[in-house]
Length: 94
Image (cartoon, rainbow, N blue to C red):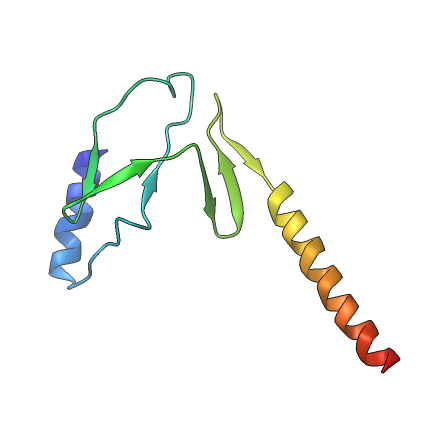
């Protein structure tokens, strides 16, 4: 994995792009997810290991196999829809 990140880093220098390691994370998935791994670095920063992440609005959780949960996205949608509908109703009533 580190070799792939080093290759990405090399190309980023050639393309005058810098990775933001504060927004970059790594996750272990599979039967060995509890095994301690070496630190991963990118653009001079350390990438943090996480147990869950959000990727294009989809939440991914660290479990023994790949598991995608849409629960939080659904809750956010319902919450935003409710607020929107309340504002619409207020406008209609006034």
